Image 1 (cartoon, rainbow, N blue to C red):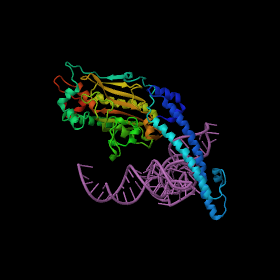
Image 2: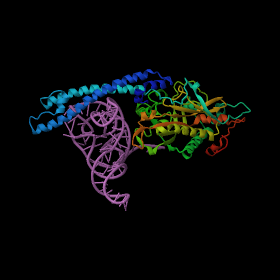
Image 3: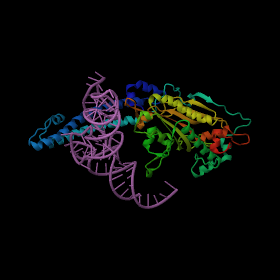
Image 4: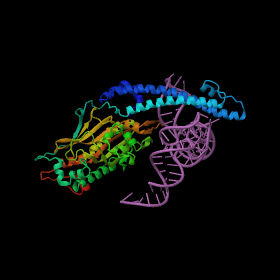
Length: 442
RNA sequence: GGAAGGGUGGCAGAGUGGUCGAUUGCGGCGGUUUUGAAAACCGCUGUGGCCGUAAGGUCACCGGGGGUUCGAAUCCCUCCCCUUCCGCCA
């Protein structure tokens, strides 16, 4: 969520930044109007509340004095709050009740306006960074680097759905037992899946300094709001029914990891927090029906190892590069040629201020596949999750959060199948997987 | 699924309608003392919002939400979480 205070003090800048993201700017004016009403009502309510509080205390005192002196007079604070001198405590109570009702009305109005503000801000995306290229859609993305070279083939490379058939890709089985978009692997591909997960986790925990976590796969709505999926993207989410409290299946491990320290104030010595977790990911892919349907490039359930960093604001840009390098390093060890794309303002995810996508080239499909998306969220998620830290001067401040895939399984598998296929229909495995898979060939 | 007991400030642990944002202890910070250190003693030590240039003022928060009351950490309702026991079970 954006900072209402920043919007209040920098309305023009806020609009300028959001315009780059194709956001309807009327939301800013709406929010500013509500903000003015909220503050006015709040101040009024509090002033009245203060005199009511003082008078209520005075009533207690008055009772005490009346026990000793039969005709003791009410205290000044009662007279001040009521505007006149009550005859007896019962009259004071009655008048204070009326005053209390007035306070409630004012406070309710103020609170409603604050909720209105939040409702609107919850669906506004983060500001893009100054470095983010401005663009309408994915055509505005910029290639920042490329690594490796697509292997040369002396035959026409096949798409993974043709290669996979031989190695236990049984999409029709998944379709029969769950529906389309739920892959079923038997034998080599199932084993490769496991090899990838183990390789990822070992690499990140041993060489990249991440702490392995094991997390719930079902979460509360509030957890999804913390990381930004709710309320706006509820259509993308699988949800259990009321018997199970309407829990949601996680679309990525980012969700539980971002809420790991939600509501806490972390000592600065503990930062940065670098966490990694393997989880299945569940996505409805609503609106993507009919897109990328062949093979398993876009599915409703897939495995992924996620990288997540919580850091102080002055380090987040640096951490973003480091995090992205960890993901890239993973691809390099897998010997997969890739490119780093910097997403433009029109294509960036909701909460990101800056985002790199890593794409692997799939020669069979003749197509680049996104295998990782590394984002810096600045304080956008931290504000929602109330995730703060205490600095060396004991000031509390919102943390910055970052995350990226390190990596997803299915598309990396596609990369392996299509890049390392041979004319004979075999698939060579990258060296780093030999030990994990138990063989040099799939 | 059943039964019981709990959720209070960094931690421990009081507080059952009024002056309690909250006794006390520990920890932490500052000071006195000391050649230095320890000990002792004194003071300070939560978060967020609103008003204000500031000083400061004020409101809210004792798991979340709602209610009763002039007034609630304290009473009522509801939800969540934790602990223990029983049952069931990978």
